[in-house]
Length: 353
Image (tube, rainbow, N blue to C red; front, top):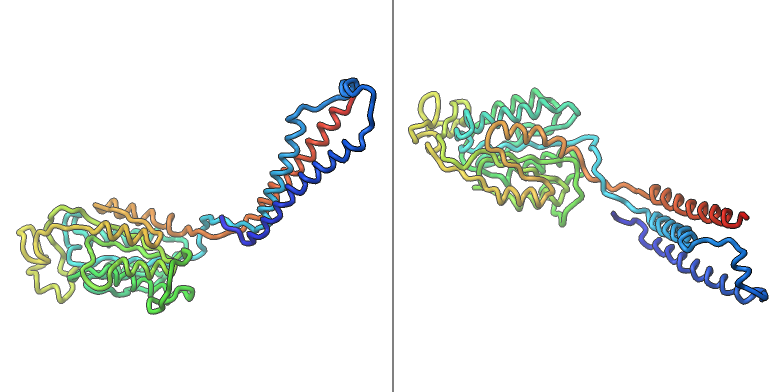
């Protein structure tokens, strides 16, 4: 919780001033008291209130003043609220290791199917953009609600050598900047971390950064613009055959294969036959932590589908500062009203013969 007018807390000084006034009033009454022959008899004749009945109204009144004084500072609370419109940049790894068959039929095919399901599940006007990355990163589809265009681009993904996770994040930032005037492009120097926006980047990768900008450097650029980066580590760490269909490999990569399919169980061809794949989870977690996102692990197609399916419920909520003065004013007024009511009620009941 933050305070818009913290200097208004000076109003809390009213309470000790009231206590001083009460003490002075009681002392003044003692000085002007009439001397009676038997004080004991007078006290015995008067109905009295117990100690807790005398103090409860005072403390309720005091707490009410404190609450009202706090409300005068115009407090604000950060609460999650649904975003009216959201841009989600989906950055999908298309490096050669996506031909790995540890996820059937291979990682690329499983990732394409999960991405299609993710796009088709969006019915709230969410804008989705698509970035693909291998040795470089490129924007395939700028943020749009055209699901047919997105699915066609997902189906056209082709593998190539290299993994440029950092460049994919920067390309996603620039794509959001083109769509949202409140987000500066990556060429603009910014310091610190901005408040989180609804616009979000989702990076799906099965390896570690091998080319281009370091992912944490790119993550700092995203964080400075208030963009969360959710990272997904896809695949297992088990050695597996590298098998891709002809239409899943770019023209430059086709020279390493032979026949209608590239790679295979023989251990040669394609992108190097059997390889031991390793996801750089530490870097992916660091990128997510730096930007306020989250890291997910998906070792098979079903897990990847679940991760992407559950992402919108996290992404479309953003924290927003909302003024809650009215609640403090209401609570303070109720406390003071209760204090006055109890004081009047108990005074009347004790005064009744």
